[in-house]
Image 1 (cartoon, rainbow, N blue to C red):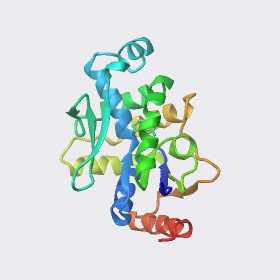
Image 2 (cartoon, rainbow, N blue to C red):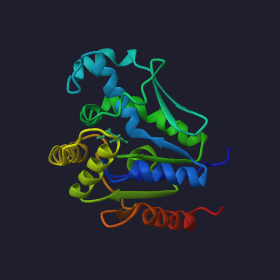
Image 3 (cartoon, helix red, strand yellow):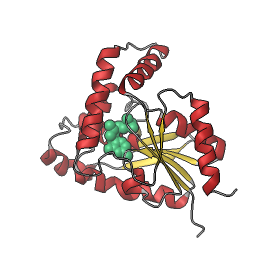
Length: 226
Ligand code: DC
């Protein structure tokens, strides 16, 4: 089998990873794999079961009841299927963001999801975003990026995005939640968010999306001959 190309994009919440990864994937004809959505699906499942994301005994007891599938529709949009149910939209709340950040710290959860993520990358050329893609999931990724921006900028972008969708958004609250998630995601013992030495770091605080994408494409072109 021809070795597939994989582009890893890691970074903290709100750094623009998913927007950028989605566009890059569409332009390059690769599969976009949003791994945060997989952790969100786990968090959503235990939320429905009334199990706290910190309750490792409860998680261990019920985790075998959970099956997760990733599907792609005709437009290439990733859908999360939890026990046969499409939960793609249900997992996009602030509450599930926080719960996903807590639940993703458990080794039993991460172990369960590792093969699923690697399998997609064995079958397709992928642009995969998350927290541990370059460090754990795809350590041999063709190109690794680490996308970041100041917490204030990330909170401002997130506030704007919610307001544009007609939802309520409180900048101060969003900033606090982003800082809390940053702390949790970087301080956990298993697969914490960190930049690997072979990653290309892009601070997007003062960069527009087009500029970031152009910089990434240039870096990819040096490694991938098309
Ligand atoms: O990317 P996101 O905001 O949808 O991710 C939600 C949470 O899931 C994030 O705060 C930490 C966790 N996560 C993870 O631990 N590892 C990944 N590869 C992706 C997400």
